[in-house]
Length: 531
Image (cartoon, rainbow, N blue to C red; front, side):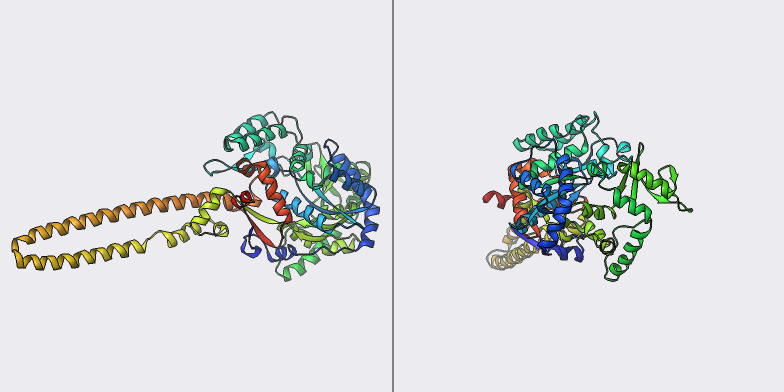
């Protein structure tokens, strides 16, 4: 398995790269206390989340350990995504499983948990998947009409409409008509059906690919409905501005270190849910609380939270604080963006007396399908050569391959040699019979014509080769850096699974799980097939 340095991959800042090599530090006594206090409650939400899933032996054991207060959690998560969302959701899961496996002991079990953030209301992001068709064109597919995706309805309350069957039909046109392609089409026809919840489909997708490794799933919306968020939401309302101030203090020190600020803290970092969707909570100029179209005093808002905690969910900066108040976390697998906003919460965790999980960067991966791998090898090109805009790639390819100096030099040498030889023949013919000069001249023109014809054919062949090179370059760019995004941040896994098969993709996930996180992994499917 080949790797390249993380700092050669666009979009990965040095602070995240540092977290990719972080170690897990275990304090058994402190963690045992957290396991006893928080494990049973977290386990109860996992039970409800996975109530319709048949848990395997490894999952059931992990759940039992949590419920009995004998385990802590290595956690990661993501909002649900149509067709699984981008590949990095799976990579986060495998990183989480890897660290949990390698650091569990007989004294203390570490259970991998995936937090499904289905209180989020970004329907466009959650309802869009990106695929590559047979001609290597990139397509973004929406699971419903854009206007419906743009509403503020939480993902947990979204169901697939009757349009989903036609959406799946269009997706099938982008997948290969092969054994692997048909296998994926059959799966997504089962996963995505009218009246089915988005959250349920995502859970089934993740369970199919990661469940065998013991990963457990925690639904944010179920925890919300069960009242697990209430205490921290009450604190956020009654102490409005506190978290904002703590984050601003941390931001100042982060900016001095050169870190980009990922998220902006509000005076209240929570949302209110009503029949029209999910709305940001704010204060008006008199200090009253704005809930959607309504306004309440703080006391009235606090009473509403106590009566209906299911109507209030956290923002991106409050959510981790709630997570680590209700789950016995030891560590958290993060991507670059999450590392940024988690870093902003360092002072908040301390001030609010919440144990902050150790941050560990997820695996970063590019998968090379056979045709792309062959192209790179043939032209001695590296995958990260394509991790930039296509215009820059074409300029570099032109500089490398557009002009064949060797051909020009060899043809010029041939012309000089022919001219030299014909000059000698002409001189000799003159001594024999001056009338032979016409034959020599005609021969010279004939040879020149043949050389011109040969050179034109060579130039034509070179142009065809270059056209093929440039055409394949566009294909390589589509797979490695689709629409100027890292593959892991853009493509759905099904576009790969339909080409390499689910068994091979499972082997790829296992290879990722067993790999180090401190380098960007390049997985060559051809090499995987040889093992």
